[in-house]
Image (cartoon, rainbow, N blue to C red):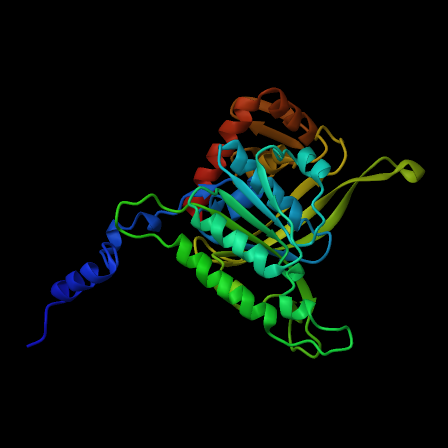
Amino acid sequence: MPESLDKVLGLLEKKFGKGTVGYASKYTGLDVKRMPTGSFSMDLETGGGYPLGRIVEIYGDLSSGKTTLALKAIVETQERGKNAVYIDAEGCFDPVWAKTLGVNLETLRLSKTDKAEVMLSVANACVRSGDCGILVIDSVAALAPQMDEDKGFDEPETLGDRAIMMNRFIRRTQSALNLKEDGTIPNECLVILINQTREAIGARGDPTRTTGGRGIGFGASIRILVRRKDWIKEGTGDNEEVVGQTIHFRTTKSKVYMPYREGDIDFYIKDAYGVKKGEIDRLKEVVNYGVYYNIIKQAGAFFSYDSHKFQGREKLVAFFKDNIKEAVKVKSEIMAVALRTT
């Protein structure tokens, strides 16, 4: 006679611990908690922000805004009183720039070594501590396995070393983030992997590839491709200067929301157009989405919101700058409509 499933699972729980197998309705991890990304546009297109307790890969070409977005995520985490860890594999962490972006250097933990294995061990330990709010690795491409370090420049490279190392890290990280139905506090650490793109010689279709093997893509709950779309300039003629850049992003994978969502982020490297250095023009994002979802009415050059009417976008933006509560109200209305209609 076959044994009942309840009896078999009961024996498994005695052997491996409570919560080994349970009913799906008991798992709080199915209700994904979110953290703001620092950009209202990205919050919307990711379904409410970065998912906590998950792996997120931000990848793209050089100077596309990858590190900036990761540091903005650290700022959001620190503002919520949680610990942040930054693994500086490239050895290029700039404390002055990080502080400009809003990072609290007094509470940020920074790891800098010349061995990838040590960095990943540090990263894994921090995630498993259960007291880490965010962990950023910058970048996967800069992680050099010891085997690679020991070789001479005239020796051929062994393919797959970094991929094997990263696959092991992904598996162990997912294990540390897994939730059980045993009443324990869920591990809500957000793990952000910054990665670089390469072009595969002879590849058909899109030749763009990321480093570290395909295991990262499979393990990530969200993959975000970022590209520099345009430079933001101020002045004319000889007095024209670059004051920022427009970052275009696209979610190429998402386990927590609709994939293939995209948007633009205006990020400033100098004070200009009413936006401070190191900040994102969030007000522009709110206005653009407000018009898109018809919360802010537009008729040619005229705009209206509630009983307020404006001629020209500049006057509309000026109104929201002087009435932040109204801007927050519009933001909430946009989020409610956007997440309901997608």
